[in-house]
Structure formats: C-alpha cells, structure tokens
Length: 205
Image (cartoon, rainbow, N blue to C red):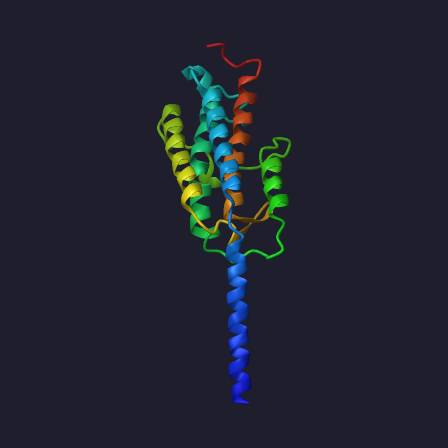
C-alpha cells in the first residue's frame, strides 16, 4: 500500500513538473516582442506629433465643460502609463496561471482592436482623473517619455509574460497583452486629442 502511495506521489510530481514546463515553454517570441516594441514606439511618436507646438490656449481649450482639454488628456496618458505598467508588474505577473488552451492571438488582436476604439466610451478611474499632477503640459509629456522608456525596458527584459493572467474588461489578459494594452491606451487618447483639435472653436494659435 505504501509503495502505491509513493508511486502515486511520484506520478503526480512528474505531471505537475510537466505542466509547469509546458506553461513556461509558451514564451513570448522575439517577433511578438518586436511587434509590441514597434507599437509602443509608433504610439509614442503619435502622442508627440499630436501635442507638438501647442500654445497655452490650445493646450487648455475644452470643447465643452464636461470634456477634457488636450493638457488633461496628456496628463491622463502619462499617469495611465505608470498605473498600467505597475499593475502588470505587481498583479498580473504574480497572478494565477492562464488556461493552457488560451487563444493568445485572438486575445492579442482584441486588445489591439477594441482598446483604441473611441466608439465605446469609458469613464476614467479616480486615480487617473487629471489633477495637474505633473505641473504643466510639458511636465506631462516629459513624464510620459520617461515612463514609456521604462515600459519598453520591462517588455525587453521580462520573461514569462504569458505565464500569468488577470481579469480585465476584455477578459483574462496576460503580461504581454497588458503591454499591448498600454500602447493601445495611448493610441485611444491620441485620437481624443485629435478630436479636441478638430473642434471648430479650437484656438488657431
């Protein structure tokens, strides 16, 4: 009886080890990392282009009392970069393992498609509501650039980005998908900046 018990324990250990090996084998490929890095870089460039050379009046123009100015949107982008990355590091990467049958490509594409879609409105969580935390629009841009560099380093240097998941409005996302989410979030709000600039009452200078 004891031998059967030992054998059962050994088999269980081997199965657990095999499952862990299979999970860790689903590592983010260099091509996937390259794609995410390119997306982080292109969305950073678009943020800078959308906010380049704005006057004080243009930064602070609000299309309506209940809508954000470009300055407020820029602050939100910078603050969200920190918030989402720290959530990824502290919660996603220490969360439970994802379902072995997860369709990574389908979820990746859902993030890339749905997050930037401005036809679906969302309320910013209280910690990310603009409060002039960076002191000025230029301060927000500076902080965003510094934070985006940290995000890119995190992507490049972190292993096991597929190994853990956390619930989100798009379902369970892994660490890699949260990096995509960060870039997609800045794309979403760059569109918002361009909407403000397209307002007929937006200051000419």
